[in-house]
Amino acid sequence: MASDDIKPHTGGTEPDYRFTLANERTFLAWLRTALGLLAGGVAVHQLVPASATAGAVLAGLCVVLAAALAATAYPRWRRVQIAMRAGEPLPRSLMIVALTGGLLALTVAAAVLLVVS
Image (cartoon, rainbow, N blue to C red):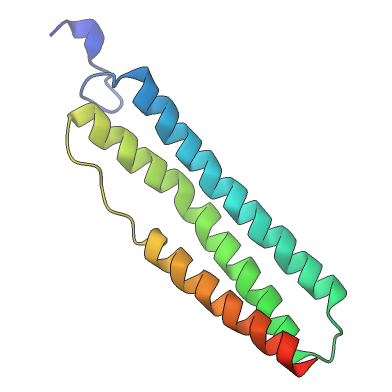
């Protein structure tokens, strides 16, 4: 292995650029999802009457889930990049479970909002 292959800030070797770009696309997809949830939360807050408690809950869930995704997107990208450089298995992410649960909660809150109004 040539000394040019080692990056001092992360160790290991430079992964195939296709995997690095795929990791970056995944990172950007997490951010787009967070942005969409944030926009949805703002829209619900603006469009649902203030008296609807379910609307406030729905908007709050959207914003909290968006913040969680945005906060964990970069650390996940970094862990995957380091694992690829080290030739290790990719780390698991609990955010997939959290996102699934959050979207289920959003769906239930939206159904309650539709039934109540």
